[in-house]
Length: 276
Image (cartoon, rainbow, N blue to C red; front, side, top):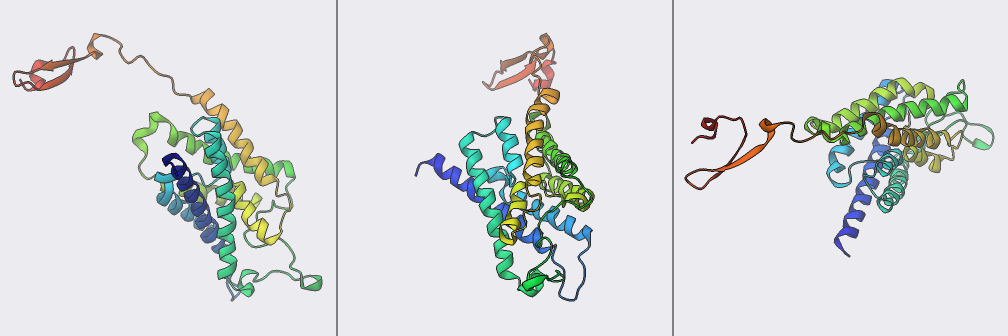
């Protein structure tokens, strides 16, 4: 196996495990307790934000920590990755999310997993499965798509800012920034659409629970945001290279001292600054 293939597989594994962690721990935080204690919305938002923060801290240096087809599509449009890498990321994210949620089902007794769910005819469960994202009944499909689009756009704008070379000096605490953004958006958007912002995150519980009500919303909204930001961000905020040399004062000179050491200075620097 050559080095490039090994690296690509390593990145795919990081994407799968990362989103698996998010779906496992995030969805675990949404489950109501066996004593009927309802999990507050704030806890759900913080749980997903913290799960994203930890996953980014673990795998950002390996794969870039996309964990989201919308982020991968954005980076593809902005030519940060090639199509082969994007496809590996897409597949890995979907598989990893499904495995993460599946592990939660294995770990959690059925009585706990479906605690408080209504039971209909033939002992069938009524309503969406645990951790499944379904738009609020008062929203139209178009409103739900717009909500997911705007929420995902906030996430993708942070991605664009982090990737911008002009922001290279402000990279401290990136996992915390993303975690807080996810938690904040989830607090606001959660009651509307569930605040998925991530097609693969919505796909995982839908596959296991069979909840497909308006599932397409969670693909159209986030991926549309990726397309809009992928072309809109460079157009509005693209990096414009300035001339490296504006005048003589900006021209670096290389001098050699008597001891043979090389020193660099600007044309108007005082020689005393070089320590001669």
